[in-house]
Length: 134
Image (cartoon, rainbow, N blue to C red):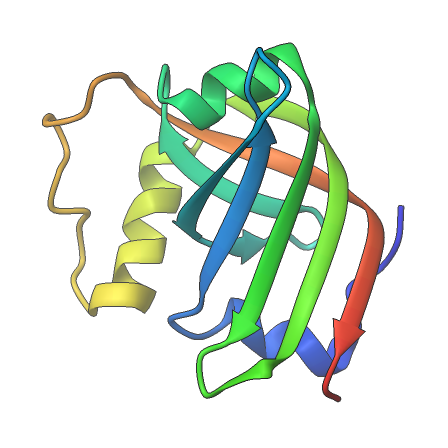
């Protein structure tokens, strides 16, 4: 596992929108803008609804990519290639509410109950981290 440089941890504290790349069953890439987080162990976290395309894709192929540009300077970014280690519903509702506070300044995710499936956290082990624009 490769560590995310401390100088780039601020990207996980702001309203940073990342691009999450997974592989479709036919081998073509699927890229989705996502809210992004990191846990205390350095794993990258993506919260989504179960049965969305990205969640289905990582069940079939756990190799993923994440591009995280600085919202104020797109030439400062993290590029992460990694492996999904877990997809879990444990703590996912609380996690999306925590992200909602960061991204929207609201206490609760506004789409609870509107989702196609239950919330899940995709936990990604960073295998290769490229930091640019320090």
